[in-house]
Image 1 (cartoon, helix red, strand yellow):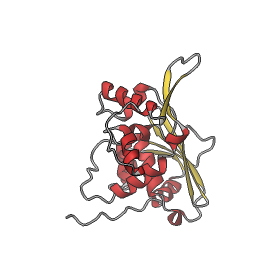
Image 2 (image 1 turned 30 degrees about the vertical axis):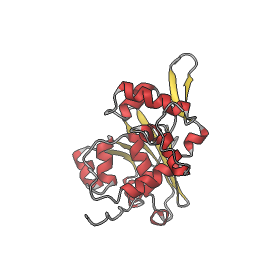
Image 3 (image 1 turned 135 degrees about the vertical axis):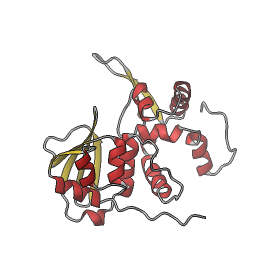
Image 4 (image 1 turned 90 degrees about the vertical axis):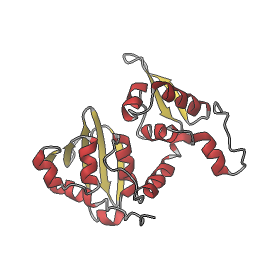
Amino acid sequence: MANTRTYSDACAAAHALDLVGERWALLVVRELLLGPKRFSDLRNGLPAIGPNRLTQRLHELEESGIVRRRRLGPPARSAVYELTEWGQDLQPVLVHLGRWGRRSPFRDLTAGISVDALMLALAGDFDAGASGDLDATYVLVFGDDHIAVRVRDGRLDIGRGDSADPDATITTDPKAFAAIFTKKRSLTESLRSEDITVTGDVGAVERLLDCFPRPEPIDTP
């Protein structure tokens, strides 16, 4: 491992923190859950991290077998970073950590959020019971970044890319989508202000949002 700092503890949880406990490491993993990214894409998803720190974290995660670097063939010929199979196993860890964190009364909901962080929140907050008999496909358009979301049989599937025939296409930005997802603003208000546009079945979008009931925060100490 590139990171020589250690808890010197045989506990597996302590060892896991040796591997991914450094500042930014788990957020780098979060940004790669939906597929490979270039260095510049990672910077866009984590604007507060400096390039040297990101380089260091990627090197440490590579050395630990969590991330690998791969060079694309022509015409791109650029390098991308992606999670290894073992690195992908961190997804449920991040999902459950997010569920735990969403009950905090101290979280700043006005802070910036990346597209990948939003998709992790969708995965964590999805309530199969609330989805009922919903069977629909959506495309979320965040600039050049397109995300396909499918709800069927009480299951939520999320992937980067388009869907051939979505029930609704939602065009927005992460901040505006986070506002309707967290129930800080209604879809109707966002449509009226044109912070969000919907092509297709608006009712299906309302039903999608109903699949994510908000968790109650703990009482402030």
